[in-house]
Structure formats: C-alpha cells, structure tokens
Image 1 (cartoon, each protein chain N blue to C red):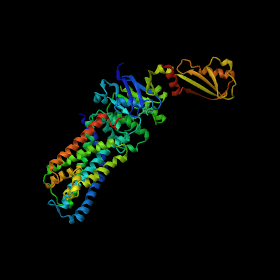
Image 2: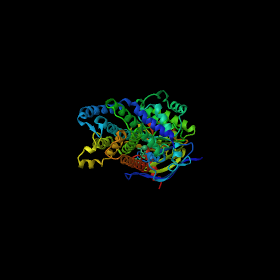
Image 3: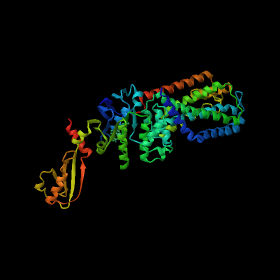
Image 4: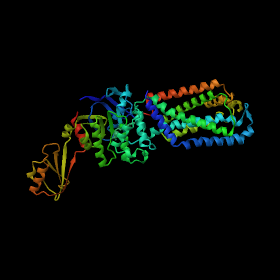
Length: 308
Length: 253
Ligand SMILES: Nc1ncnc2c1ncn2[C@@H]1O[C@H](COP(=O)(O)OP(=O)(O)OP(=O)(O)O)[C@@H](O)[C@H]1O
Ligand SMILES: [Mg+2]
C-alpha cells in the first residue's frame, strides 16, 4: 500500500493564540477512505485547511501525491479537491458557469463531457442552467462536491459531508463516496458521527482538542469501541436482578424500572437473544427496548484514559 | 503560469459585471451628464476660458478621472471582498494559482471595466462639448495606467476591509474629496497661494493635470511629474499586494 498524503510534524496556532492542532503525523494510503472523527472544535477543519492551503502552514511538512504543498503548491493542489464545511459560492451564477470556473481555476482546459458526467453523478444535470441561489440546501451541498470534482482530483477532502443532509440523501452521499473510492480517488472526510465513520471508512482517526489520539483500521477500532447497551423498559419495577440472570452483565437503573445489558456488538455471540429468552423464562416483562452505542464523549473519555 | 485560472477569474468577474451592465454604465453616464448641465451649462457661462480652453472642455479630463478613480476602487475592492465575505475565497486559496495570477484576473477585469466606463464618459461628454485630444496615445496611456493603479489600490482595500462599512468608506472619504479638491473643476492656479501649496500634496492633482495635458497641452504641473507620481503610486500598490500574499494578510487564517 502506498502513501498518497503524508503529514509530518504539522501544528497550528492561530493569531488569537488558540492552538488548534498539536504537532501531528499522519499518513493516508492511496485509495482509502479515511474518516477523521472528533467533536466540535477538535481541529478537523484546521487540519484540512493546512493541507489544502486555506490555512497558513507554519510548522511541519505536507507531501501530497509526491509534491510538497508549500514549495510545490501547484503540483500538490492540482491533485486535491476540497469540499468545505460551509456551503459558500457566488449565488448569482449558474451551476454550469461555476463548474467551468472551478475547472479553469485549477488550470485545466475546458472539458464539458467531464463536467456533465460529474453533474449527472450528483443528480444536478437538470439544474445546470439554474442560478445557484435557486437550489435547495442539499443541492447546494452536492454542487460543492461537484465543483471539487471538476478538476479530477486524486485526493478529495469532504469536511462534514452529511451535515444538514437528510437521512435518505445521506445514504446517497455514502454511495457516491464509495463510488468515488472505487474509481480510484482517495477520500478524507470528517464527521461527528461514529455511524458514518463505521459505514464508510477503511481507517479512522480520532481527534480531540487538537490531538490526534489514535489512528486505526476501522474493524480493529470497532472492536474496541464496540461496546453497546441494550436498554429494556420494564413493565414492573424490579427490586433486584434475579440470580438466574447472573451470567449476563446487567444493571438496574431508574429505581428498577430500566434494565441495562452491556455487550460487545462485534462479538460472534452478543448474547442478546439468549438474554431475551432468559427474561421470558424468569418472567420479567418489558414494554419497550432499544440499543445504544457508547456516545462519542464516552469514547473520548475511555480513549484519553487509555493513552498516556 | 496558470493561464486557465487567470482567464477563469477574469471571465467570472466580467460575467458579474455584464449581469448588471445597464446599471453599471447608466450611473456614470447620468452623473457625467448632470455635471455638464450644472458645471458646463449653468456655471460654465460665467467661467469663460481657462488656459485657452472653454470651461466645458476644461472639465472633461477631470470628470473622466473622477469616474475612473471611484469606479476602479469600488469595482476592484468589491470583486475581492465578495468571495472573502461569502467564503467562496476558499476555492481560490486552495487552487494551484499564484498571487500574481489572482491579481491579474481580478485587477485585469476591474481595469477593463474602468476603461470601458472611461470611454463611455468621453463619448457622453462629446454630446455636450466639442473637445479635442491633442495626444491620444498619452491620453490612453494615462487612462490605462490610472485605472490599473487604482484597481490595484481597490484590491488592497478589499483585502483589508472586514466589513461593508470599511469597504465603502475609502471611496467616500478619500477618493471623492481628493478628486473634487484635485482640480477636476478648476485650475489650481486659480487658488490663493496657500491653498495652491496644499493642493500640491494631493496626488490626484497630478493625475488630473497629466491627463488634461494629454488633451489640451496645458497643465498646472509638468507632465513628467504627473507620470512619475502615478508610477510611484503604482509601485506602492504593487508592493502592498506583494506583501499581502507573502503574509497571507486577511486572506488566510
Ligand atoms: N480562523 C481562526 N482563527 C482563530 N481560531 C480558529 C480559527 N479557526 C478555527 N479556530 C479555532 O481552532 C480550534 C479548532 O477549530 P476547527 O474548526 O479546526 O475544529 P473542527 O474540528 O473542524 O470543529 P467542528 O466540528 O465544529 O467543525 C477551535 O478552537 C476554533 O475556535
Ligand atoms: Mg470543522
């Protein structure tokens, strides 16, 4: 596996004195989908900005597809596409005009066939003559992606692609991202949602307070983060847990009205169905049930405490 | 050299202008006409002849300069401020373009607009007074050089401004007064001694006089001083632009 993007000793302190990123090393492999996971203000956008050139790089070195992003910025930037977190375009232009602008800006000659293909793949072709201000929020977001693809980048940054996108559209977006990866584009996306990272990524990096806490294969990480809870709302409150259920990792909450079963979601046998059968056998009745993944906050707490 | 990028930016800026072309041309034409009605017809009759030129013809170069300066500064500052304000600047910052190319695209487009406006005003003026241009080449050179320099200045202003008030304050507070006081409507030779000396500190005096020299061969200051002044100001604006991109001033976090 070859490395397409290498970030070495990069850190960032803004003029305001905020240290958005502590010295960070990160390598992205060619052809992978890498998810950068972290809460608000963690430094995700800053890291992307440093690679793409929207934030000044003062410390460290970044090599994108063999080119230094500062010294050989032309070569490096030609390979990179950026979809920013916020939708921001000139709203009086048409979709087609802005696409042509983007391609030209990246130094490529006109290629209507490529732009057509990109717009079609994002279901924007019918809107090509429309002014941007007349597009819906979701369409504008897709247009931002289309613009970033107009110059056929080999590395694509998606800064929170699913923010403000409805559930159905999110599925489409995921399918599109996978399609891009299959066509050979390396993708780095940021997200707040574990589900999204789990759904899409080959590898996941977790960042918090400007520190890249860990980088791991998704499957490995999901094992570590696989802790899940089954919560049962009981028909009648229980004073204590029946000893016949001692095999299960159970706790009572809310004065015995809620029974919680902690299990490993990636394990071969999660024990969920066995538990439900056992509950029936001992005559514990419940009104409702749901499962919960440990929240991102929980994970950070556990990760930070594991790493010295 | 990323010529595609220069072209893309230039094209984008011109397209923005063409969307509101009528408006863009109408207001300078209207204000020029008003100036001619007020200054040329109403007051001009009392003014007689200045340095051998009728008053109506005398104010033509000043009027063109007045519009060129304000239009250059406001057009160019708006052009770069807009993407900064909307956030669309991210695309330019992340593109394989050099500062030189960015400036060429934005300032080139703004300069084109100013020159077109200047030409339109000259044609409008012709409807009111039969002026002549003794040295058309020098006239064109002054027009282009001034438009380009003040578009650069506008670009710097647009980068510096971080709100809409700042953006409109410079044309209003600096350019307009300097032009009015810079002898657009009178010869500074007509001023009392003290104010004549003060006027010589106004850079716009040199622009207007150099420009007027190319029309009528007369001016309050030698034409080479005018050329030196405009070149000096051009050099100043160029170094400001160079510094902005070197430091990422107000463009990059
Ligand atoms: N231009 C800037 N000037 C000063 N401080 C900034 C700037 N941009 C970001 N910061 C600060 O840097 C830190 C990291 O911000 P960043 O935008 O990188 O976080 P993020 O992980 O993208 O957050 P979010 O999930 O909310 O998008 C924050 O404390 C933020 O306030
Ligand atoms: Mg962000």
